[in-house]
Image (cartoon, rainbow, N blue to C red; front, side, top):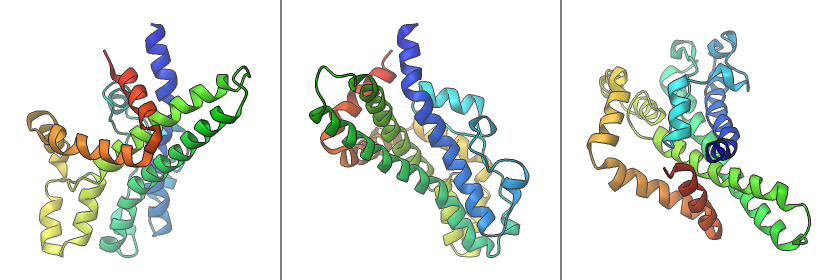
Length: 227
Protein backbone atom coordinates (compact mmCIF):
# COMPACT_ATOMS: atom_id res chain seq x y z
CA UNK A 1 0.00 0.00 0.00
CA UNK A 2 2.80 2.43 0.88
CA UNK A 3 4.47 1.73 -2.46
CA UNK A 4 1.24 2.49 -4.34
CA UNK A 5 0.72 5.72 -2.41
CA UNK A 6 4.32 6.75 -3.10
CA UNK A 7 3.87 6.15 -6.81
CA UNK A 8 0.61 8.10 -6.94
CA UNK A 9 2.17 11.01 -5.02
CA UNK A 10 4.90 11.26 -7.67
CA UNK A 11 2.66 10.80 -10.71
CA UNK A 12 -0.60 12.55 -9.89
CA UNK A 13 0.29 16.26 -10.20
CA UNK A 14 2.49 15.94 -13.34
CA UNK A 15 -0.07 13.69 -15.03
CA UNK A 16 -2.97 16.04 -14.30
CA UNK A 17 -0.97 19.03 -15.54
CA UNK A 18 0.05 17.19 -18.71
CA UNK A 19 -3.42 16.14 -19.83
CA UNK A 20 -5.27 19.24 -18.58
CA UNK A 21 -3.00 21.80 -20.23
CA UNK A 22 -2.95 19.71 -23.43
CA UNK A 23 -6.73 19.94 -23.77
CA UNK A 24 -6.99 23.56 -22.66
CA UNK A 25 -4.39 24.49 -25.29
CA UNK A 26 -6.57 22.98 -28.03
CA UNK A 27 -9.61 24.94 -26.85
CA UNK A 28 -7.70 28.18 -26.35
CA UNK A 29 -6.19 28.19 -29.85
CA UNK A 30 -9.53 27.17 -31.36
CA UNK A 31 -11.20 30.16 -29.69
CA UNK A 32 -8.47 32.50 -30.88
CA UNK A 33 -9.12 31.22 -34.41
CA UNK A 34 -12.90 31.64 -34.25
CA UNK A 35 -14.43 28.66 -32.44
CA UNK A 36 -15.76 29.34 -28.91
CA UNK A 37 -17.18 25.81 -28.42
CA UNK A 38 -14.74 24.80 -25.67
CA UNK A 39 -15.39 27.97 -23.66
CA UNK A 40 -19.17 27.70 -24.07
CA UNK A 41 -19.06 24.12 -22.76
CA UNK A 42 -16.90 25.07 -19.77
CA UNK A 43 -13.77 23.30 -21.01
CA UNK A 44 -11.42 26.30 -21.00
CA UNK A 45 -10.61 25.64 -17.36
CA UNK A 46 -7.63 24.33 -15.44
CA UNK A 47 -9.96 22.20 -13.31
CA UNK A 48 -8.68 18.70 -14.20
CA UNK A 49 -12.01 17.05 -13.37
CA UNK A 50 -13.52 18.78 -16.42
CA UNK A 51 -11.06 16.95 -18.67
CA UNK A 52 -10.43 13.54 -17.11
CA UNK A 53 -11.40 10.36 -18.89
CA UNK A 54 -11.63 7.59 -16.25
CA UNK A 55 -10.05 4.86 -18.39
CA UNK A 56 -7.46 7.19 -19.88
CA UNK A 57 -6.42 8.46 -16.46
CA UNK A 58 -6.03 4.95 -15.03
CA UNK A 59 -3.99 3.96 -18.11
CA UNK A 60 -1.79 7.01 -17.66
CA UNK A 61 -1.03 6.16 -14.04
CA UNK A 62 -0.54 2.42 -14.42
CA UNK A 63 0.61 1.85 -18.01
CA UNK A 64 2.53 5.06 -18.70
CA UNK A 65 0.36 6.61 -21.39
CA UNK A 66 -3.25 7.68 -21.47
CA UNK A 67 -5.69 10.32 -22.62
CA UNK A 68 -8.23 12.90 -21.50
CA UNK A 69 -11.69 13.73 -22.82
CA UNK A 70 -11.02 15.64 -26.04
CA UNK A 71 -11.96 19.30 -25.97
CA UNK A 72 -14.77 19.77 -28.51
CA UNK A 73 -13.80 21.84 -31.53
CA UNK A 74 -16.22 22.80 -34.30
CA UNK A 75 -13.85 23.15 -37.20
CA UNK A 76 -16.62 24.79 -39.25
CA UNK A 77 -16.41 27.82 -36.94
CA UNK A 78 -12.72 28.37 -37.65
CA UNK A 79 -11.96 31.28 -39.94
CA UNK A 80 -9.83 29.09 -42.22
CA UNK A 81 -10.95 25.55 -41.26
CA UNK A 82 -8.36 23.51 -43.13
CA UNK A 83 -5.41 25.73 -42.26
CA UNK A 84 -6.51 26.52 -38.70
CA UNK A 85 -7.08 22.82 -37.96
CA UNK A 86 -3.31 22.38 -38.11
CA UNK A 87 -2.67 25.05 -35.45
CA UNK A 88 -5.43 23.75 -33.17
CA UNK A 89 -4.05 20.21 -33.42
CA UNK A 90 -0.44 21.28 -32.84
CA UNK A 91 -1.36 23.23 -29.70
CA UNK A 92 -1.60 20.05 -27.57
CA UNK A 93 1.76 18.45 -28.44
CA UNK A 94 3.52 21.83 -28.32
CA UNK A 95 2.14 22.33 -24.81
CA UNK A 96 3.40 18.91 -23.71
CA UNK A 97 6.82 19.60 -25.22
CA UNK A 98 6.91 22.93 -23.37
CA UNK A 99 6.07 21.14 -20.12
CA UNK A 100 8.86 18.64 -20.82
CA UNK A 101 11.33 21.50 -21.27
CA UNK A 102 10.08 23.14 -18.07
CA UNK A 103 10.58 19.81 -16.28
CA UNK A 104 14.19 19.77 -17.50
CA UNK A 105 14.75 23.22 -16.00
CA UNK A 106 13.31 22.04 -12.68
CA UNK A 107 15.58 18.97 -12.75
CA UNK A 108 18.61 21.15 -13.43
CA UNK A 109 17.60 23.50 -10.62
CA UNK A 110 17.15 20.62 -8.18
CA UNK A 111 20.54 19.16 -9.12
CA UNK A 112 22.21 22.54 -8.63
CA UNK A 113 20.59 23.15 -5.25
CA UNK A 114 21.57 19.69 -4.05
CA UNK A 115 25.16 20.69 -4.75
CA UNK A 116 25.12 24.02 -2.89
CA UNK A 117 22.76 23.48 0.05
CA UNK A 118 24.08 22.07 3.34
CA UNK A 119 23.80 18.29 3.44
CA UNK A 120 22.25 18.40 6.92
CA UNK A 121 19.66 21.05 6.02
CA UNK A 122 15.97 20.53 5.50
CA UNK A 123 16.05 21.41 1.83
CA UNK A 124 16.16 17.78 0.76
CA UNK A 125 12.65 17.29 2.15
CA UNK A 126 11.41 19.63 -0.57
CA UNK A 127 13.96 18.95 -3.31
CA UNK A 128 13.61 15.18 -3.40
CA UNK A 129 9.87 15.00 -4.18
CA UNK A 130 10.19 17.96 -6.54
CA UNK A 131 12.97 16.18 -8.44
CA UNK A 132 10.99 12.94 -8.62
CA UNK A 133 7.91 14.71 -9.95
CA UNK A 134 9.99 16.66 -12.47
CA UNK A 135 11.59 13.42 -13.70
CA UNK A 136 8.19 11.82 -14.24
CA UNK A 137 6.83 15.03 -15.77
CA UNK A 138 9.62 14.97 -18.35
CA UNK A 139 8.90 11.34 -19.18
CA UNK A 140 5.11 11.58 -19.44
CA UNK A 141 5.14 14.81 -21.45
CA UNK A 142 7.57 13.34 -23.97
CA UNK A 143 5.31 10.29 -24.29
CA UNK A 144 2.26 12.49 -24.87
CA UNK A 145 4.14 14.60 -27.40
CA UNK A 146 5.36 11.61 -29.41
CA UNK A 147 2.05 9.71 -29.29
CA UNK A 148 -0.07 12.68 -30.23
CA UNK A 149 2.15 13.48 -33.21
CA UNK A 150 1.56 10.05 -34.77
CA UNK A 151 -0.16 10.66 -38.15
CA UNK A 152 -3.26 8.68 -37.20
CA UNK A 153 -6.57 10.54 -36.84
CA UNK A 154 -8.05 11.48 -34.41
CA UNK A 155 -4.62 11.96 -32.83
CA UNK A 156 -3.21 15.45 -33.27
CA UNK A 157 -0.66 14.28 -35.81
CA UNK A 158 -3.47 12.85 -37.91
CA UNK A 159 -5.35 16.13 -37.78
CA UNK A 160 -2.18 18.00 -38.80
CA UNK A 161 -1.70 15.64 -41.75
CA UNK A 162 -5.33 16.07 -42.83
CA UNK A 163 -4.86 19.82 -42.80
CA UNK A 164 -1.64 19.67 -44.80
CA UNK A 165 -2.77 17.20 -47.46
CA UNK A 166 -4.70 18.25 -50.58
CA UNK A 167 -8.44 18.25 -49.94
CA UNK A 168 -9.15 14.92 -51.64
CA UNK A 169 -6.41 13.03 -49.81
CA UNK A 170 -7.22 14.80 -46.53
CA UNK A 171 -10.89 13.81 -46.78
CA UNK A 172 -9.86 10.21 -47.46
CA UNK A 173 -7.62 10.11 -44.37
CA UNK A 174 -10.35 11.73 -42.25
CA UNK A 175 -12.59 8.72 -42.91
CA UNK A 176 -10.32 6.64 -40.68
CA UNK A 177 -10.88 8.92 -37.66
CA UNK A 178 -13.57 6.66 -36.17
CA UNK A 179 -11.13 3.73 -36.20
CA UNK A 180 -8.03 5.65 -35.11
CA UNK A 181 -7.80 4.35 -31.55
CA UNK A 182 -8.41 0.78 -32.72
CA UNK A 183 -5.57 1.18 -35.21
CA UNK A 184 -3.33 2.67 -32.52
CA UNK A 185 -4.03 -0.15 -30.05
CA UNK A 186 -3.37 -2.69 -32.80
CA UNK A 187 -0.04 -1.06 -33.64
CA UNK A 188 1.05 -1.03 -29.99
CA UNK A 189 -0.04 -4.49 -28.90
CA UNK A 190 -0.13 -6.59 -32.08
CA UNK A 191 2.92 -5.30 -33.93
CA UNK A 192 6.54 -4.52 -32.96
CA UNK A 193 5.86 -0.80 -33.50
CA UNK A 194 6.13 0.03 -29.78
CA UNK A 195 9.35 -1.93 -29.22
CA UNK A 196 11.04 -1.08 -32.51
CA UNK A 197 9.93 2.50 -33.17
CA UNK A 198 8.02 4.28 -30.41
CA UNK A 199 9.91 3.15 -27.31
CA UNK A 200 13.35 3.96 -28.79
CA UNK A 201 12.08 7.33 -30.06
CA UNK A 202 10.67 8.25 -26.66
CA UNK A 203 13.84 7.06 -24.92
CA UNK A 204 16.05 9.08 -27.26
CA UNK A 205 14.09 12.31 -26.72
CA UNK A 206 14.00 11.83 -22.93
CA UNK A 207 17.73 11.11 -22.83
CA UNK A 208 18.52 14.09 -25.07
CA UNK A 209 16.50 16.47 -22.90
CA UNK A 210 17.53 15.05 -19.51
CA UNK A 211 21.26 15.02 -20.23
CA UNK A 212 23.24 14.13 -17.11
CA UNK A 213 19.99 13.74 -15.15
CA UNK A 214 18.91 10.74 -17.23
CA UNK A 215 19.87 8.29 -14.46
CA UNK A 216 17.34 9.86 -12.12
CA UNK A 217 14.63 9.73 -14.78
CA UNK A 218 15.36 6.04 -15.47
CA UNK A 219 15.26 5.19 -11.75
CA UNK A 220 11.96 7.01 -11.30
CA UNK A 221 10.34 5.33 -14.32
CA UNK A 222 11.57 1.91 -13.24
CA UNK A 223 10.19 2.47 -9.74
CA UNK A 224 6.82 3.71 -11.00
CA UNK A 225 6.19 0.95 -13.51
CA UNK A 226 7.85 -2.01 -11.83
CA UNK A 227 5.50 -4.73 -10.62
